[in-house]
Length: 170
Image 1 (cartoon, rainbow, N blue to C red):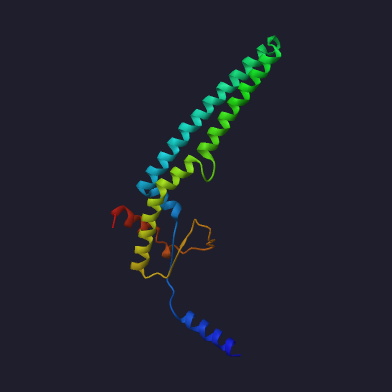
Image 2: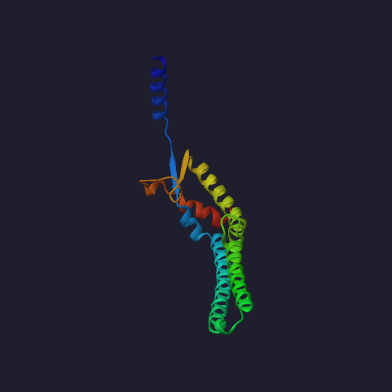
């Protein structure tokens, strides 16, 4: 019984204290914060460059494959094996390049993404912390995160305040 009484008293005390809650939309922040836009642009350029390389290597492989098919009947068995091995090797080079650049979590793209976005995310978190403190909030949720926010009253949206703090650099 004591435990039950303690639970109700604790609940009543918690319910009487005002808990101020706010939320941000980190997706909006990342789309409007200049350093995040620049970082995403750099990542997109890198992705385009590597994709172009893969496309070029794939075109070369397809050309080599087509040429080999045309000449395959006129080759000796040894030459046929040699050409097949060359084609397999070219395909493996493409796969290795794709893995090296795009594999999660050790691919160059993900490493570069972490390198570029880590300081930006730290600044965003500092700005959220600052706004949270100045607004006297106890909790701040991210509307875009893993937490499911079923309803968000715009009155408690601090996204613009965080963006303002980031843009002013204070």
